[in-house]
Length: 510
Image (cartoon, rainbow, N blue to C red; front, top):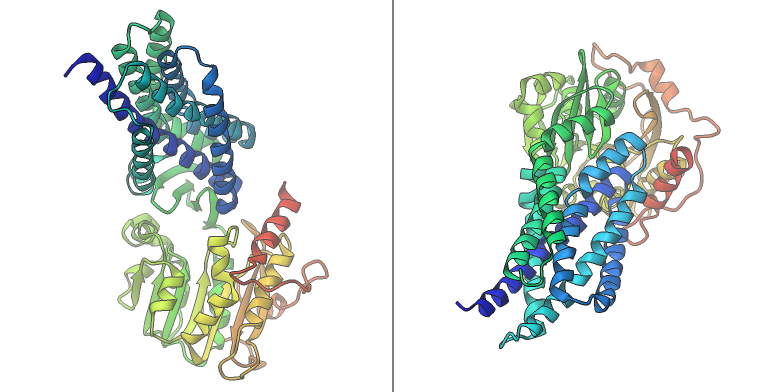
């Protein structure tokens, strides 16, 4: 192969590699922003828009680069530094400064501008070396194929096996490898300064990569109050478990899911009112709740023959079923022979299932984005009632009636507006109630059935730590600042709930 042909082949290969790295940086930025800033749909949309706009600026600015190959090499070195250290910088900024938005979008713009310069510069280099078969569409094709590979690899390989911090550094090293080979093959235009900066950047990146686990530990120690005993990225979320003495906390995407100090308040209120009021409890469905705490409470009731737990992330259910110290928190409930675990999207399960259940418990994440909001929509509740037995009850966690009052009552009114197959033209009968959970604050639930509940106390099992007849009565009383308000119902066209949720929490904590 001639030297010119080798250069041409390398530039096309480099186009593929830099396309992979560029999209990985974009996905890392979007994922970090959704973890730390919330509302994944909004954050992904903003990140994609800013990144593409910045690429446009970079493509326009590339015309001002005099020596195309030298400019391409500088772009790769700069991307290796900025993109490679993006995730570490963002997590450190959030952990120590409490802010991530400014460095996130600053680095995102820089990466976008540099990425936008790459293809025009490569095209100019190919022309300058007289590539006989040069066609600009070939460069774009290779670029798009690289983007496809990156988009598939990110959730399936990169996050599960590397995690965000190591992934950022690995692809930073990839950009530096591209820079190094380009400097070597085009050494007639490379400068001494480029070689020095490249060598220092590569050394720093490899050193950081070797210390990435330590960097993760240091960051997590700053982010979480207690010792981190488990930190794992899955294709669906970041799982973190912390411990202080005998106190354990679970965080998903850095949001607390339970604290063993007070989780009994939440899970007893989620489970026992419906279980204690339903005429039959032979078959119970739980959507979410992969930690098994709700299953533990369900199994305290006599008459339970079958519990179906549907949770999207198999790793969560594996951990809380198979890891002894975590399984102990749910009293080994996920190993009970009456429990069937299905790792599937809740909506898809409800659409495909033909079973009926006496009690349905929805222990789902808060509706902070559209993907989650659909599980609080009238359409979803319409599917649920088809799976509910004629005398059955369902209950959902509905967020905080204090911190996100409009969101809570939107959930309640959405359920109430759901069509009742036993009363054509009518809706479901609801019972809103709430409890104070110190880890979360004031927290609300909504129970629903096809007819109004009888005026009786739920039959409660022995040994509960919080719920009693007295607390059940008080749980149904709302204060003036948490009581019902007129709001829009939530459906998959409007997703009014997402706005209510974000506005409510932002008013308290922004």
